[in-house]
Image (cartoon, rainbow, N blue to C red; front, side, top):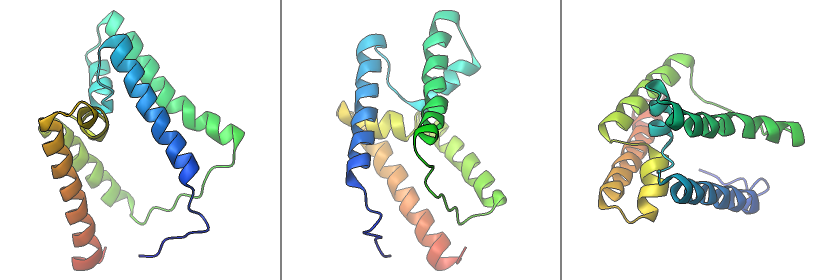
Length: 144
């Protein structure tokens, strides 16, 4: 693996991390809710009116923010080294993992770890290990 130091951009990454932390903090303070995307979207599938409003606004922000970014700046080049069948299977596996793990990377990895939740620490270690194993298997064993 080589790092493309010419494209290394720590300041935008830091700004993005700060914005994610700020959004998660504001949601927790304003609504008493964890900013776990799978839980927020899942709540929209069984909506109740006052609850659905903030969930829809949160998801709308997730959709509008990259559109606004592309309007202000050129979109970065995105290269995905996988075909549609692999991406579809990966999406199903991630969805199953979020159900079994009772949350996703944003809920456990961002919000749970910041609250020092032991359950979130275990969940984060498990999904990181699963990710490492998947990359190792697909790149080095199966050469996908």
